[in-house]
Length: 462
Image (cartoon, rainbow, N blue to C red; front, side, top):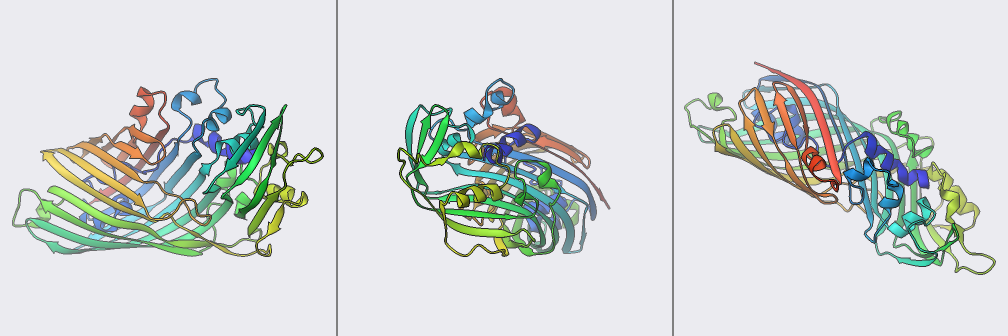
């Protein structure tokens, strides 16, 4: 179990932090296919008739415990992660866009995109339980700690691929106003999945000179599900990359609307392309789910019961989970020791996982020539504690921007649900872009708990 939980910490050192991908770029008035991933209705506003996307990369993490200074100090990250009384929350999230193509014709626009996503989520893990499993109770004093939670704790990893087909249409287009609608239909290719969920956990952790025991657990719902490469080993980053795409087994969609209040009205709206006083949009993204099918598929609901400690039986020894690498090993230990009862028969079966559905709203306002400011809001619609749910975060971002058309620089100021406030900077030169929504905070504050980086290249013509 130590490796299961600490896999997330190791990923912090090789990726970056946050949750909003391409912050400041997708709401730019240099509109392209990437803008349509935020709101499909934006595709009609493409700055060129054709656009080819070569690549886009975004790597994010957000957590509520480990600061930037901790990564470069001699501090034990495992100890820091499970200090205090607040539940541990950590999200690792990466997106890789492959080749994409978009075009517009009169009042219509079309695009095709390809993407691979990898996520690792630690959701509301009790610090006392995590400390007992990972650190053998190093953060706790000798004696007993009672835990009684009313929520579901989760450790989950997911990989999948997507092919997106976007269509958008202009409804109103005159000298002062423009209104678009759009939709994206996504083909989903689930790769690997793994989930450990403990719902309404109760119990007593006892630390006796380095031996840590769990006892007094009554009727706790335990969900263990796995599929693909993550079934065999959860702690190795390579397991997230070797089976990222499976067969076609899911569908999802995005819906969006977009409005522009044009600037400098002209008789020919085409000459006024993306010259606006206000550009606003609303979209619902990731409506759908995918089904995992694999030869090693298992999804089982158990009932966990561990009796009160006695002189001859102190309970479940948590030290034996220290070098665990897979959920199968966790399952085998608990079954062999007789602590698991089945809620249902343990069979190989397909299981469905919901995508992180969100509502996105934004408004980009012209302040003076070449200077804009954008407000962005993301609201999740689903419960991250559900065992069949891929997570999302609530986000608010304000982004001032300076643009000359060919060159653009912007500075996102964000507040995320888990890590709080961050600020960063990004730029675009022609079709190349590089940015981060948290690099300024990371450099200015040792306690910053998020960072991110993204880059990509696209070519628009005609």
